Image (cartoon, rainbow, N blue to C red; front, side, top):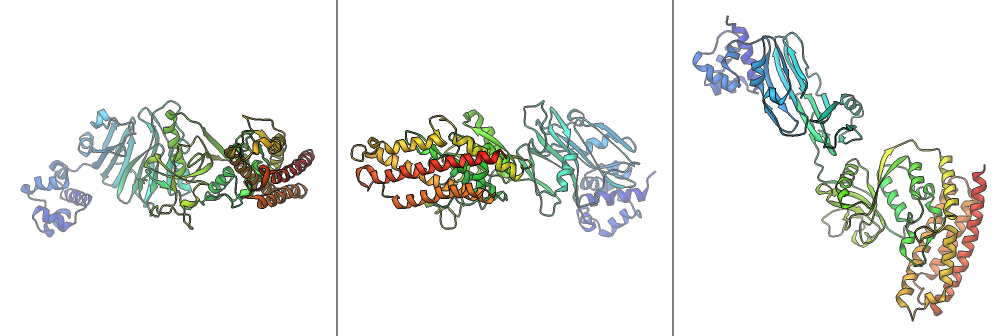
Length: 568
């Protein structure tokens, strides 16, 4: 039996679902707004001749208007979060009186995407009690009934379903989503740290979310190493454009600014950007790099590289509370994976420290990327003349950073953050590094600590190496390496003075301060005059030998004092 009021309610509901006002609906059908109002109030029924156009406008069958069921499918979509197929008509055929029970498979629903993304069936339906929503991922069953209330949208936004994996296998990650929702993150980084990966797959994995907002039910899919971002009002999720990401405001790097260790300076710039409170002097002190000295008899600038012979990186990363993730001399086959890790870190606001980014093999900071990481940007110690007084690139169209010239041969990422040791534990590790590095033996052709002092003195004493007339190129190379090594020694011992002074080891601090001050005074006296002194610089070499002998004896006393402290 035809029920005017049920038919009227059905027409009213479907019209609103289409987003049509009564006036717009009337205009499409060629009737008056009053006629539409009478239909919807159950006073009159539409004329038979109008029914085909009425059903077409509302996107339903004539039968679904004239014989409304207890359970009515308003809208159904089979989607993988990127592509979507309207399956409203298909699901409507499976409604049995006041219930629907179907297997969510591409074969049963009659839709497929040819993708490894997880597909989901989303449904908006009506019962006499109201309008509700339901969903189910592929491989499960969707069961809804007219007598059972489904999901409703009570707030502006809520995630109602979450899975991570691919069509080979996936898991429910709603607990993870509730955890991240607690912190109200702006961006959601989809990777194997935030959503642990299945050990059974080597294929790309995806995060698929179903959420409700004021506009209904939605599904979105995000591939691993991509980012989902919330709208400003947190009522919608969209894929963030990850083809480009630049971290603004990372400080310029330069020699001669009381930060002459490129490794330590690059770490300081990265950590400062990340909001960590460590000073450059503390980085040098906690790592033990402030006690280092390396020398190679071939007089090579690489001896000033902090990590050329001794591992100061492990003590530092333990002290600052981060795991370190190294990529050392990767094959080209591994670059794609590493590029993805760089992109992921930059997206999460973590610069990457690397060596050999521009000009020469010194440490710098990867500060951003374009084209999904195929173009990298950086801060290095070689940028100076190319930057203006505000640290921007001259003639760079307002850009902040220079483009890298080379693929770095070593990179270090800031990994998981852990609890830091106590300051006393950090100090004791630092002092043990002082002792160990001073007594370390030659490594890969680089003399260390005590032996480095001795080899440096021997090199300065060898007059045949300093014959400016017979070997002009050799003289200038050695003079340049000598200058760089002195500058590093001044900077590093100044850092030792500051760090140990802060930790209350005033006696050792003062001894290091004496080395730094005396070396600094000598450096200022002879800078740019190495080739102007007669007899191959015999005078400055003699003064420097005396200076280095003093520094060596002082550091022997420092090592003894450090050992005594460690015995306490």
